[in-house]
Amino acid sequence: MIGFGHTSTGVLIGIGAIQFLPEKISTPTQIFIVSLLGVISHYITDFIPHGHYAIDPEKLTKKSLALFTLDTLGVAMFFLLIALYKYGLTSSFWLIAFAITGAQLPDVWQGINKLTRIKQNTITRFESYLHSKIAHWHNPPNTPIPGGGRPWSKADIWQISIFMFALWSVLFIG
Ligand SMILES: [Zn+2]
Ligand SMILES: [Zn+2]
Image 1 (tube, rainbow, N blue to C red):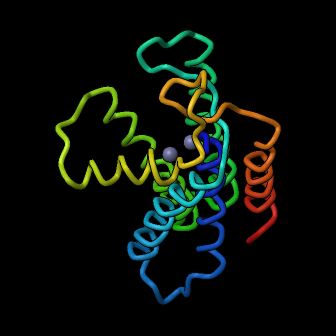
Image 2 (cartoon, helix red, strand yellow):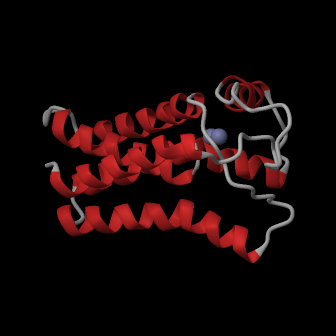
């Protein structure tokens, strides 16, 4: 799943937490729960066959960088501004912010890992296997996408529907 899909899933987790987590659970615990659910949601949604756009971190063009920034920071800021307008700086806002952060974390980690070549250990190797091999079982053998993803196609309407659902939820629920 590309950035905006993970961000949208994070928004849905945040809205769900605001609706359903009992008030007697302390705010730090709620924040921990949504962050963890965000991370888990990342692997689950990556598991569903999805397309990517081409971006090569070693050969960035202005266009690919603009698309990437819009897809990641742009969409996250868009949702956070709506949440801020709706809730102010309350725990509800932070639940959405941390759920988005959790949902983005595995890709942020993968990016840092690729760019800085951090020394690998059992945990990072397991994450890489889970993320690239198991969750991305659907990557085709030959693809123009650097890093080997399935290219964006009409089937990716499902990623857009999650975005629309998240937008509807943040505007009209709670
Ligand atoms: Zn993917
Ligand atoms: Zn991912």
